[in-house]
Length: 243
Image 1 (cartoon, rainbow, N blue to C red):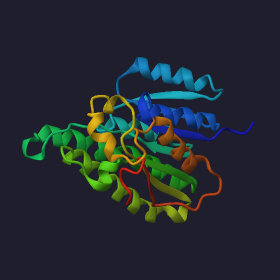
Image 2 (image 1 turned 90 degrees about the vertical axis):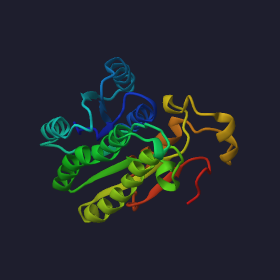
Image 3 (image 1 turned 180 degrees about the vertical axis):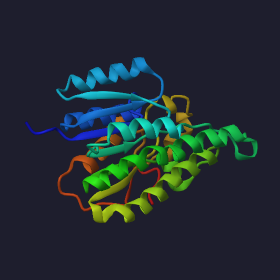
């Protein structure tokens, strides 16, 4: 019996990551779902994925912890690389830069950008060995055009775009494709407290996006068999940023 393709989704227990996991499960992928500490939500996501007739395994680690992240991923994917890696880890600690603490800066950079190194390096090594793979990095509109009050977050998400573009050039000859999806304002727990009345007029489509709309683009990059796209950034933002 032929094995199903396998997708490792980082930050999969809630929000955009959960929607991506469910969409990839619909496309026939077995799912590796990583999360940091919310075991209850992770188990709920696992059950929803498995209800679609595919397998799901959970990995609990903090992407900013290099030692534990590398140890888990290197051991698990030593013999078989995942077919797809979706790097969706991210936190925000918003503040005006003049008032931003060192901890607010470090925590965001260490998780969003440092986590990229900790997660992607062992996986891309396995993909290069397999001579195939697809990597999708979840950045943000803030990383494309910047956002006041988010210097740390914008820096980290812009850094992901630069890293993905450079990595795409390095690994394309080994049939490993690297692309970026940059969501705008998406309805998740992270955007619940945003002042909608101020933001909505800035979005040409006149509404916040849905996690499923991000997931559909990730699914295209991950599952479409005819693919000649690498090193690209696809915005999912309702026209908020047209770059």
